[in-house]
Structures are given as C-alpha cells and as structure tokens.
Image (cartoon, rainbow, N blue to C red; front, top):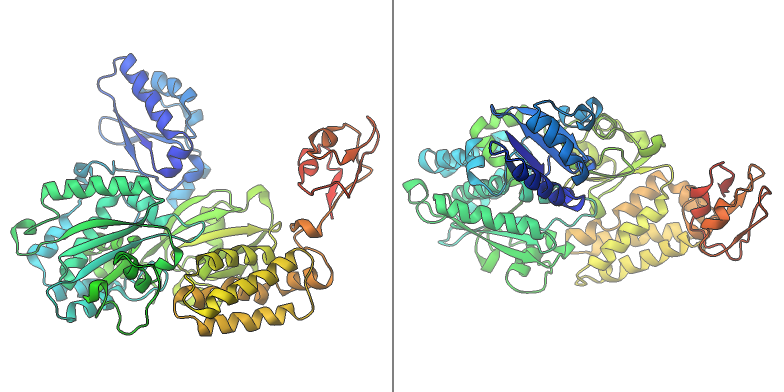
Length: 584
C-alpha cells in the first residue's frame, strides 16, 4: 500500500508535515513493511488540507482523507492500513468530490498525484516522452506549428499567441538565445504557478526544453520569487535529476541539441512581471521597464534573442506535443483555446485551484466548482486579473471566461486569480486596497505612475474615512486616464483598472461615501457604528468581550455602547448570541 500526503505550501501550513511524521512513526512501530509513505504537491482542494490519499497494491486510489491532523492518523492506520477497511467518516464527502470532478486538468494533471521530488514518478506518467519526440523526430517549424494549431496563448496575463513569440525568437539570428520562464507570481490571491512548481516541476522543465528547441536556445532561466522557497528547492532537485538522466545538458537523447537551466531568485517586485523589467533584473539591474521596440525576441537578455512565458504556459506544452494541437484546440472557445487554471480565494466556500476549459462562465466556476459564497451571503463581485484587472459585478456572472469576453467587462483574465467578494465587501475599499498595492510596487520610472497612483490612493483613503469631497469621482477618472496614457509598462497602464471598474459598476457606493457619509456595505470603520437593540437579554457577553470597555449595563438589562470609546472592532457583534447588536 502507498500513503500519499499532500505537501504543497498550503498543506504544510495546515500541518501536513506533522501528519506525515505521525504516519511514519506509526507505520514503523507496527512493522508495516508493505506500506510506503510518500508526498505529493497540492491537488487543488486547499480548503481540505491536510489531504491523505491511500492507494492499494494495484495503485488504485482506495480513499482520500481530508483535514487529517496527527490525532486522526492512528485510526487510519489501524482501520485502513491494517484492517483494510476505509474510514468513511474521515473521507472526502460526495459534495467536495465535485470540486475536482468538474475540472479538466492539463496543467495540473500530475499535481497532487506524483512525488515532485522523484523523477521516476514523472517518467511513469509519460514524462519527457514529448521532449524525446521533439528532439529526435521533429523540426523547429513543426514544433511551432503544433503549438500554433493548439492556439495556446500566454497564460501570464496578456494572452499573446505562444507560437508567434517562439517563431519571432527563432527567426532572429544569433548563436546565443535564451528561453526564460517568468515564475515571479505577484498578483495578490494568485498561486497557480507556485502549485505547479511545487507539485510538478518536471512539466515546466520539459516544456522549457521543448520551447528552447523550437527557438534555438541552449540556455533557459527560471525567474522565481525568493518568497517561494519550497518551489525553488523542488525545482533544484528536479533539475539535478533531469541532468542525471540526460534530459538537461549536452546532446539530449544523443542529438546535437543541448539545453540547460538555471534559477534566478527574484526579490518579489511586481513590476518584474513585465518582460523588459524582468530582463533588467536578470542582468543585475533594478527591475524597470524599457522602451519597446526592440522586443525581447530581437534584443532581450544581454541584447540576445529572448523568449519569456510563464509557468502555466510551459506546463501545457508537453501535453500538447503528446496529444496534438487539435486536441488542445478542441477545448475552450473559438479564440480562447484549452484550459485555464484559476486560484479561487476570498469569500468562497471552496478555496483552491481549479482548472477548467476556457468558456466556462464565472457563475459556473464560483458556484459549480467553488461551492458558492461563504455563509450563503449574496455574491457581489469578483476581482479578476489582480491589480491589473478589475471587479466584475454579480450581474455579469454569466460572462464566459475567455480573453475576449472578460475584457469587455473592463477586467482581464490575467494570470488567473479570482478574488470573490460578498455583500459585506466595500467596493471603494477594495479599489483602495489594490491601488495601495500598485502604488507600492511602482518602479517609479514614469511620473504618472509614481505620483498619479499616490494621488489616487490619497483620494480613496479620504473617501473611506468619510472625508470625500464633491468632484472626487471626476478627479479619480481624470487621473486614471492620464496614468494609463502616461505610463510606459503594463503596471501603470492597468493600475487604475480596479478603480475604473468599481466606478463603472458600483458608482453608487462612491456617492454614498462622499455625499451621504455612509458605507453601503457597512464595512468602512469611519462610517459605521454599533447599536444594542431591545433584543438584548443582558447576558453581559458583549461587555466581557469588548477590548476597550465601551459597553456597560446590568445583568439581564439592556446594555449600552459608549460611542466615544468604541473602536468599531465588531467583537460585540461577533459574540452576541441574540442578534441584538446591529451595525449601522
């Protein structure tokens, strides 16, 4: 038997390493020599971690156990590993099985299944067969043509045709060319690339090697943020194993093609998601964008032809080579082919990673896969594309998730983050949050981006404090357009998007803040207060939990909140058992 414990970052954060240690200890104590304990990356159901899969001697999954802390390990060992009877009460529910059942997994095909630190497990599922096929039996043009037929577009945000970038780099002459992977995942709430790096690093290595062959590069660089230590560690292990087996290095599969990889740990600058800023950082300079043209395909890293794609884009490539471009193109929509990985976060019941065919609607993703809104509150909006994207209201929930359809809403598909918001989310404050992020991440090269985002943020902060002024909305719109027009790179050009989309769909909330001094969502502290109604039973629970002693009253009598002392923390509302405290 084999016991697989999910040990991606999400699993480890919830205690998976301790769970694994408990299994190791008990299996050793009981002398279960036929039981192997191993690890895998995240399978995507992050909300159920730690996850333990038990496979039988025939390698068939017998049970998937969820939320397994060390105190539950003994029961699984005794009843399942020894008694051969799965523990039903600890197993994943039929409802939670739907999270994975509705997905179509290409990028995540091996995540949560194989051990990312054992190359043999990757080879066992067909790993490196695509690379072998490419370098031993295909030409550069044939590889590019397969990717063209597939219609694979860059999954990093812009959605630019992958084949076109590879072909442009191929056509530029030079003895030195570079294939670069942008693994500097910076969007708040996005963790798609990290999951692939931690759960299936060989798919990235193989995809980059295939791309390197297609464009004529002999060296590849993986630019990954230093805040991903587990991803870097597993990448280094995978690269060493690939070199040992001859999948990286000189004369791959006995041919004239040589290709190797190295890792560059980035400092976590969001602006390095822009190609030329990333290249500057690779060269040891401050990450700041450069004028284009020339494009990286002509003059990139050290002025040599360079191609840059993100992790998800490369992870698709081996599958496309094996199954054919037509198979990939058959999924998704007419112009947005294949699948897309989304990170579901925010006010959603089932947070995690979902890979679905392009063209599925926002509603189907949030309700069909994500299980709907936490505590069954009303769905209000979803932020797509991170700080570069925008807020899509619930009224547009039936919008298909394609590059074209999402762009009509004012948002973008982006790298794949979906931050779900409910009725308690203030859209003005949400815009303020994202603008605060982009203001801090601006490299400062462009005046409008550096100063304009700061001025927009100051206005938004005033509005959320209840100090909004007549004309603020118009000033925000004016600044937004000037920042978009006056910025060199995508960071500045898209920084105003969260503000513009919230103004487009939730203008009433801005007006309520400015003219009525009221937060529509009852969220902004400066614009709310708490009152105790006559439903109060005088249990004193609210008074006992108030951190500043703002609540007074006798036992079994209605209590009162001193508004001059109240810090609006909401502890009284959280602890009231009778619903007697209202937020105004």
